[in-house]
Image 1 (cartoon, helix red, strand yellow):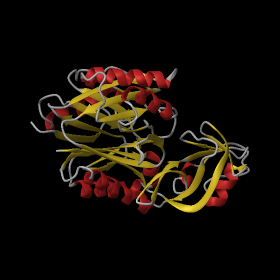
Image 2 (cartoon, rainbow, N blue to C red):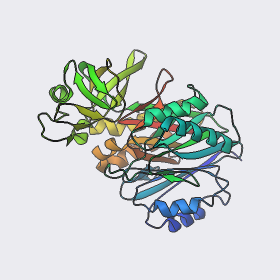
Image 3 (tube, one colour):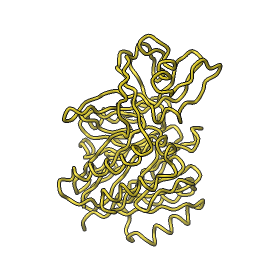
Image 4 (cartoon, one colour):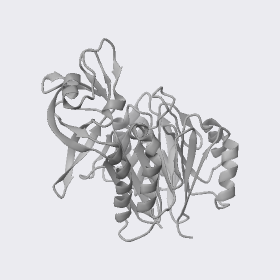
Length: 390
């Protein structure tokens, strides 16, 4: 039987109702792989109990900001979605781990367990699909790469909640963690193509990061980062007496790091400024390194909406003529919140690009993917699409 992909989206508070609905519309046999994403208030605890019985299926789960999108449109109010692959000729394995103590070691252990569960220990998968709690994504990537190598594409998104309160969760068939990672290794029987981009362009202003630690930027060109960014694009508050959240205003004016180029067109990995502090520093959602050159990026609702379809089109083009059976999409939760009332347009753009095949999109608090120089990276305000050939 050729690969088949099915999706299901529903807004429910009862996991049993959702599970029975899936059984009514999908094949009677167990899927090879299922990726489950949804709002923290969509009955995930009930569903997790139900997927525990799916002992023939690799189960990958993570919460998403507000809801999901799919080939049926966007559902941003307590929605839940499932993406299932039926592929008798492929191999799939998933494992989750708590990363609170040692994210590198825990992620490596999860990757090894996922390979063992796929029956492919010691082999390099075609793709790794990951979801982790926000905050330690670079360490998670390092741990997974220590097992699968640096050439295997690692794609995914950080688990999210509805208000950045730490309510996110990840899970496999048997475990559920608030500070964890779930790693899935995919050896599909058909071709896979991936695209990883953003919907912003450089505005022209450039500065060098002169003082930073972890995910906090203290100075750009020797000046307080908040002041510098405010002059660039109004994305950061200055002279505040207390920390100020700047997520919404910085969504359309983030910072970018050039990590490569194609046909002389630069590729940027984005940093989303999150908080401005009284000392003039700003927090971002990815690790930074002193000496990096930072570009002010600019975006709009139109660019964030249209980019989803373009990313899907690029992923489809990578199948080299084969038709897609379905797709997994990662769309930044911050971008979704900025264009929430137009998310059906984004879903429709993906439908048009892929030819109305089943797809599921999750809204994340950080995005991971492979950039042009084949390096797996963590960024913000990004969009990715994985297409599976039929």
